[in-house]
Length: 34
View: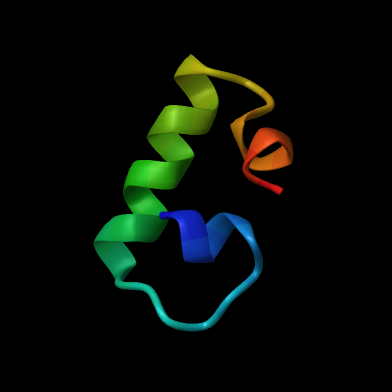
């Protein structure tokens, strides 16, 4: 998920789905990953 949040290209579809769920539960997670 970390690579997905950073805008990378090396992640699985499940990472994208899990990242979306985490973002719903913990807004701002993508920003904090940077």
